[in-house]
Amino acid sequence: MRVLVVDNYDSFVYNLVQYLAQLGVECVVRRNDAVELDEIGEVGGVLVSPGPSTPDKAGRSMEVIRHCADRGVPVFGVCLGHQAIGAVWGGTVDLAPELLHGKTSVVHHDGVGVLAGVPSPFTATRYHSLTVLPDTIPAEFEVTGRTDTGVVMAMRHRELPVEGVQFHPESVLTEGGHRMLANWLRVCGFEVPEGTVCQLENGMRELAAAARQV
Image (cartoon, rainbow, N blue to C red):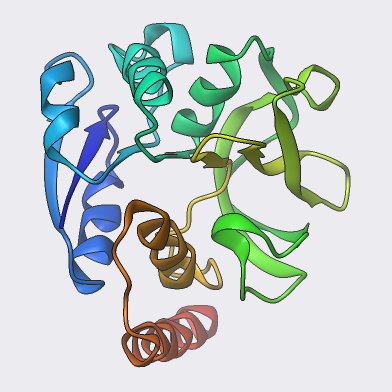
């Protein structure tokens, strides 16, 4: 299966691409100002990447999300992509209570959507100064993950296959990143063998343990 990755000019996008490739899918990567809407009909799902900008300055990201929603194409937004999803449905993206760059937080969640099978709480790596304000989360969405202080870390549409996470699943210090992406790929119609997910997760745990000792 092929998935479209909308690159919001982010240095981490190819870490996401690597994770997806390890799970067995082919990625088509397009910059946010070069993506064509007709490409969406040729893929099983669309991932909207992190990036340094704001949703309204993220090229065609919001347009892509609307296009996918209208056609029932699964969408997964990461960081800026998550914020863009919120903005498409009228949520307010504004300054987060604290600026975090490469810091980890504990995330509590409901175990649904991309977070199914991930321990709660788990550790996630965050790189953001903006957030979808919790009191502006669109009615069409349910919040599925939060920090201890109430910052929204994950949300999913109540009816459409649209979901976003504020943290970075592709970070070595985020627990369960491969499982999250495998859960999303299942929504896209691609089943990743459980053995593959476990093997990749075990490898990341070893890397994370080594990173913490440095």
